[in-house]
Length: 114
Image 1 (cartoon, rainbow, N blue to C red):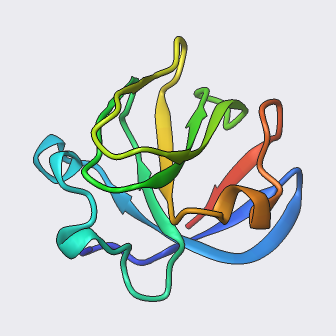
Image 2: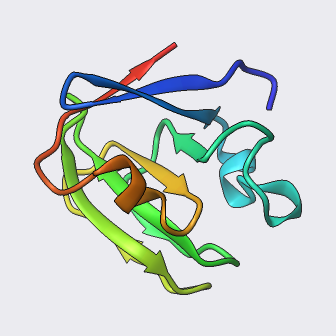
Image 3: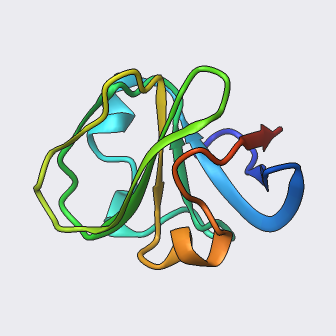
C-alpha cells in the first residue's frame, strides 16, 4: 500500500485497529497481495466498492453507505462467493473474526480517520 494506514472509530469510539486503503480498480481485483492484509492492519478499505466482491480467501466484510453507516456485515465470507449490498459505496475487507472484535454490526457508524 502506498498510502498510510487509516484508524477506525466505531460509533464515535476510537479503536486501535487500522486498515489500508485501496482506490484503483486494478488493486481492487487483488486487495491483499499474498492473501494477507497490510502489515499492522486488520484489513483494507475499498474506497469505491458497490458490491460484487468475490475474494480468493475467507474474510469478514462490512458494506458502508456514503455517510459511513454500516449497511451489511458478512462474517467469514467463504472464498470466491460474491457478496452484494444495495446502496453500498465502499467496503471493508477484514481478517476473519475482525467484525466481532471491532463490534461492527449493521447500523453502526464507522469513521475512517486518516
